[in-house]
Length: 200
Image (cartoon, rainbow, N blue to C red; front, top):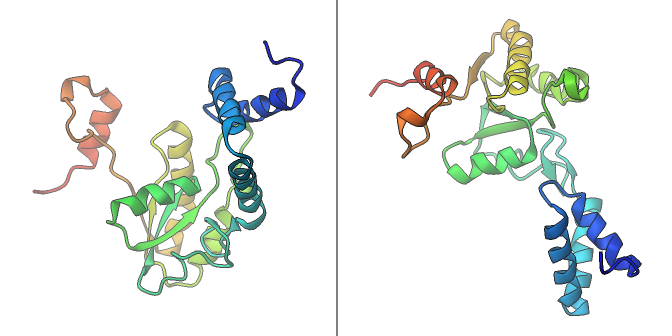
């Protein structure tokens, strides 16, 4: 590597490489891009990183990300408080919010049960979910974890805990993406599409 003797540059590239989905070449491009910026823009970038890390924490209600005690969604009185959509990661909340179709609350687990990765139910925000459900205000939870083995296992585990409380547990319907051809869908996707069919 040509910049081996430029220690700060090598370290900057190394830090970018640690980000998910960033390979060596992309890390180099990002590092050089930062160096090409005027000093004040590079400082603003660094400041934004530090501020985000220092000020963002978990919402005391939904465990999503916020810089306040309670996030904007949980503190919004117009949201339907009888329904909670349970997601694996904070970025999943943003995906639902972009649709503009959901007006309930959320609960972020911060992962899924994965014995191979040594992630047990105790490491997720399940206890906090159960605490929220004990108020009696919630009538339905939507399990919106990914349709993977780990996502399904997590949904089943939480469902077994919640059903004795008399709360309805639903699962997102998964199926054929809009605009795709049936011949290219795998059998698992087709099976889930059949299960999640609606009356028209």
